Image 1 (cartoon, rainbow, N blue to C red):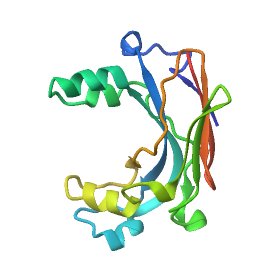
Image 2: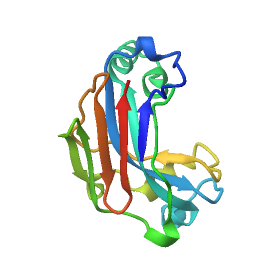
Image 3: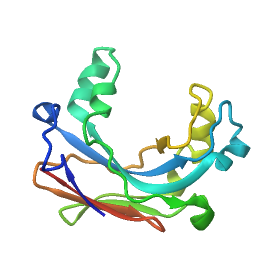
Image 4: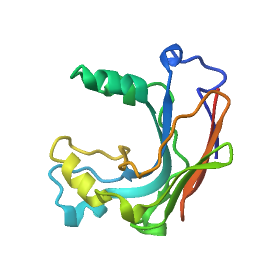
Length: 173
C-alpha cells in the first residue's frame, strides 16, 4: 500500500512546524469487542485484527515539550501522522508474537527488529489501556517502539513491513 504524507490534495496545518520527523514501524491491533478492565489472558478475545502501521513523531517538538514538563501530545499526534496498511482479521492470521519488522528510507535500512523484542505484548497493552479507557470496536492500538529509529526529510520514501502483514510505503512531501 502506498501513501503520501501529507496527502497532495490537502495541506496540513501542522506542516510548517514539522522539523524533525521520525518514522517508527509498529504492529497495530484493531479492537473488535468492547471492554474495560480486561485481564491479560482474555485480551486477545478483544482483537479483531492486525495491520502494519507507521507512527511519525515530531521528535524535536516532543523533546522540547518533555523538557518543559508539558504533555507530549503535539509531538506525537498531528495530521497524517499514523497511516496504516489493510487490517487482517485475527481469525485468519492469528495473534502475531514474533516476526520481522523493518523500515527502509530510500532503500536503506533504518529499523530492523522482531515483534518478539517488544517489551509489552499486545495482550499486556490492551489490559493496561483498558484500566484507563473503555476500549471500543474500531479503536486502533499502536504497539511499542523497537530499536533503530531515525529522522526523514521531505522527498524521502519510507517503506516497511511486518512478516505476515505486508508492507506500507509512505513518501514525505
